Image 1 (cartoon, rainbow, N blue to C red):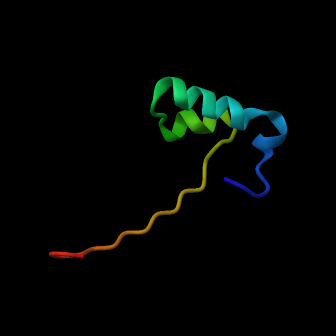
Image 2: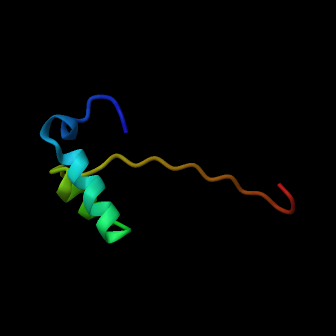
Length: 53
């Protein structure tokens, strides 16, 4: 988590980390609400494999 994240300036990132530690897990909508963002960019990568890999 780095770069031009407005949450750093507002202190929301620390609040996010505190809530995540308290709850153990957060959903994407909960994270977006804490960071006061409408949506979060998400990227993922899949790697199919068979057998030992």
